[in-house]
Image 1 (spheres, rainbow, N blue to C red):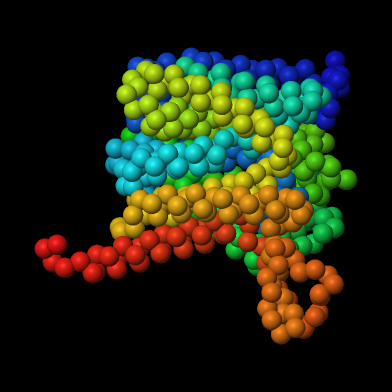
Image 2 (cartoon, rainbow, N blue to C red):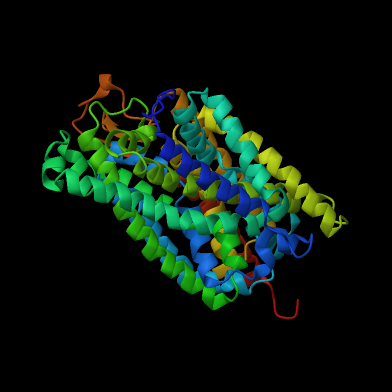
Length: 509
């Protein structure tokens, strides 16, 4: 029997459908068969804080690498530079996390970032942090990627495909919480490496690397920076600090068996991420070389590469490698965002609620997170934009308070911490809206000398002024840097005020 061709982009032979069907069935069985020891928050949210090193590494690797279609999109923009922009920064900050944060996070009684901030600076700080964590954890990018894969297989509208992704992710979590996600991640972990090793090996055998790379017309894509200016490289590197405040990353470290296993697990995970970067970016470069023309939608580069080069059977293996890691990460972030609504927000407002009630609220929060994720996925239909723009708004607001909560000895008052988070997010979000409205894709600002005076422009300087005094500069600041500057300024002022107040006190007063 020939290949079935009723689908949009990825056409599968019967053997492929059999492999995909078995894989999806295995995910459902693993997820729905998870049984918690009790209905407590501790069991539902962090699996009783008893994740073995193997389970911890598998779920952390899948969660932090769930944006695989986004890597394909990034390779289409930056080529080899994807490794520098979206790989190296995360290795660096993950190592920092392993050495400076992991043991403190696991040894702490607090299970979440908002809970930690509340223990340091009070209820208002915890509530504001919870709102920001919810916005950061909403799995919009992952819902979009699963939706794209479903659409490519079925030719259904993206909106319907996204809805299916949301319902499936929420259903997997309903009973098993983190334990369900971990069970799915163990299978996804194996398949992501098998899938990308399969396509890389097949391409290496049939398409010599030197010949393939030579066929890529834009040679900037073969450079270390991918043709990106220094300012963009710096901006992406700073975005790697996402690792330090990512709620799903934090949750998994808090779930490890011991502080030492949490720290060692993060370091081991860095090695696996580097290996998978090698596999995925190599596949992306083959896509640039072999797909003529490139897909109009960059998110479909990997699915179309598999469609174009792999034979029946192997095509399904590659597809499952993509699908597994995305679903695992989508479920992970859905759980964190749902738990934030139920435990960190509703639980703080209604402090007398029982453990069982809070667990029910977390399940309702999963529904709310799915709805918002679907809205964002259909509104900002680019994974890279969701990472770079939306994520930056929240990270800039959280980074300094979270770092101080674990590593610092801040003297500034609670009001300074709360104000720093609120103002930082507001400024970054305003910049995001303005940049979107003016089509300033790289969030650039311009600095130009006009009539002897340096002027700052929100975006590149107007062309009418180019060469006015022969000096102008343009650089990208993203959405993270504005918020980070505002946050640092407010906390710095609060710190100075607190020190002056303490210095002015007389002994015994």
